[in-house]
Image (tube, rainbow, N blue to C red; front, top):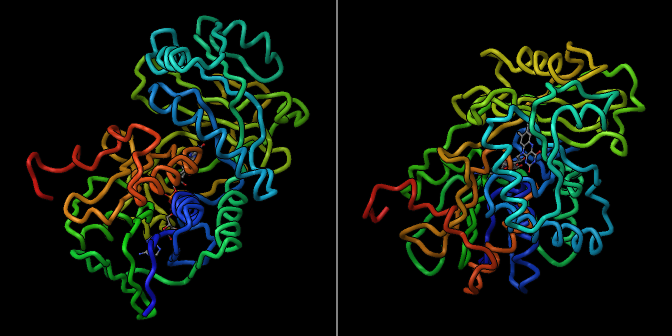
Length: 388
Ligand SMILES: Cc1cc2nc3c(=O)[nH]c(=O)nc-3n(C[C@H](O)[C@H](O)[C@H](O)COP(=O)(O)OP(=O)(O)OC[C@H]3O[C@@H](n4cnc5c(N)ncnc54)[C@H](O)[C@@H]3O)c2cc1C
């Protein structure tokens, strides 16, 4: 009988980091992945994700302060270089609340940052930016790039090196909950038993959790990664140009955009829209359909950037698992306290992964979590007084 302390479902960044932190607590851990251990059908593939403390909610600034330390410790332990510092520039119209709240959150978290106008940003990045002069800008020097796929691989490798078991091509098809031991049935047909289960199945979490009575209100979006040719690659290198988040309207709920200096493909700048097209479910991500984001991103480029083509050279696909309030769920099942759900990262969960792994390992071992998890409770999506 294959009995574990913890089974983790899903070897994307959240599941891989969680499995690693659980193992560091001395637990016997099994990590299950339906596809190959590194694949591009979920949300954690590609070479780059933004890391930043610049968030409009103070809770994330606190978590990211911890995350930076954890990423750095993990780089030392694994020997993998995962973080590249570039600084981050957040900009938008003067009335945009997300930009001003980012400055307040950074101040409340005592994170050094600068605030200046669009005019000053254009002076500092005279070869790259042409922002409206009255825009507000926030700059935080710790912003940068995480090498996404390398990070997933490093967590999986360290996990296995320390004695964890990773089984890929092993899809969880059934969860039997209700007692001190959870049974996990997989295809190919096999059963595993564990005292605790962590479901970190990204966009597949909703379907998997419906079998254990949870009706999660997540929406799955097909999001695009767009890469654009630049006239002079030398001015868009990570030492010359920061990662950025750009708003173009007063309403912070409108689509906003983000970009990273040249990192993945030579001569190509990554500029994308935050969001995407709602799709039926994760398995229909690569079916064509719906208007893409190339046109609005191209308009954003012509409004704000210099020397960047407005014709996309490469478009790749990824998925956002959106929760209604854009905060993830990191919580125990309301009936089965030995099941923890971690999903709904709403397009911003990569950078948080070490903290997610750390707090889940604390929940499993019964320690009080190092961060306030109030924002991430399942109860906010369940009917009041519901036992489910
Ligand atoms: C275009 C794009 C840009 C982004 N940019 C940023 C950024 O700049 N900064 C940032 O912090 N975040 C960013 N994100 C968000 C971040 O990448 C995601 O929040 C994160 O990757 C989610 O990881 P995950 O482990 O929850 O999901 P996934 O990576 O999808 O992993 C879930 C895994 O579970 C497996 N699985 C599912 N069901 C089963 C099953 N039944 N049995 C076994 N295995 C199963 C899946 O195959 C998958 O491997 C971006 C996301 C996208 C799409």
